[in-house]
Image 1 (cartoon, rainbow, N blue to C red):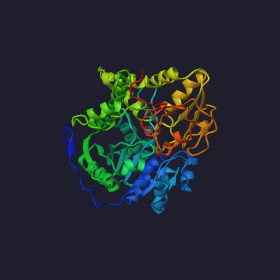
Image 2 (image 1 turned 90 degrees about the horizontal axis):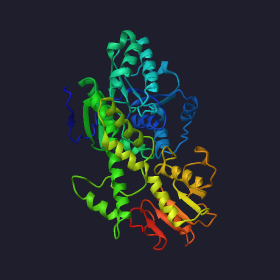
Image 3 (image 1 turned 180 degrees about the horizontal axis):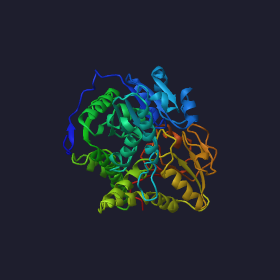
Image 4 (image 1 turned 90 degrees about the vertical axis):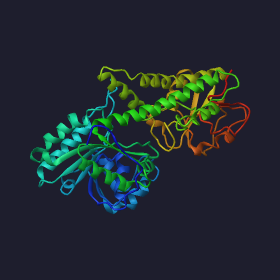
Length: 447
């Protein structure tokens, strides 16, 4: 195939496909849902992870983090799933393996391939020991452009030995958010395939479409094109978020202005669209911030500058200070603050780069008394000794101010439990019908 993108139109979910023997390396918050979805599509799946405690939990049906639908889908398909820490048995019959292990960011902003290389080296070693047969390795972890056909493929080929000519590699990352992983995998907008050959791309497309329950677009690209596409898509989404928050800042300083109405008007232009045009907290989590920074880092490696990515990060970084400035205008030293939502988004306990957690740390340093409501997060996760209530539990103090950081539906009734004198800062508009007095919606004019 040519190096140019081959974009296919909407495709009908393939009803006929070959059930395959698949291995997934990495059984964490992305790997386990992938295993469940593959098994639900009829494939036989072995999940491998070096974390033996995680494997023991998964064998017993225990999911120790919050991911809606995961526990039930694993249980439903338990007869087609094996969890192990032993590579040797898993690869005797395996046709395809997916690598979905962490690629943590280093200090420069690049992704580390350490765990991916460990995984493909183990795969290659097992393939070198068995009777020669074709095998497709799919890298599902987010990597820097150039990595898959570079050091990752080199490690795979070296470890595969005499069978290396029968091993192909592809790149196919998922576009998911924690808390909606199953939904995102089964109802994607896009299936992104970076293929080494047409035949390997067709196998991967067939497996991918066996999982989905909608009619997504399929993009079959070269591997470098797919690597660039993954981080570029997330960088563009974060740009829309920061643009929305910049509009929100401007409206706050403009009399008779509401960012909610302005962004709705802007989004009605078909060239722009409504998606992610919402005044709210800054973006956080394990994907958006680091993918945006990695996009700039990759551009730098080419002698270029991804100026939009840099500006996006700058706008996002100042959002916590912006909320704190509003709080300081309407409170006094030693006031009691209720922070609602510590995770980076609804339906997860992940707090990586969470705006709520960052605010708590700032507020405590300034002498405020801080308590929190969160559905899933526990105080030991981030080492701050503050009371954390579950939604619906009795709120034991009168608060001077309550701030909504996460727009989870389970938090919608919290204003009813607060004293009438409590000032409310609503970053998302979830509480806009709760009261008229002492209510401030982020993005509205604030004198």
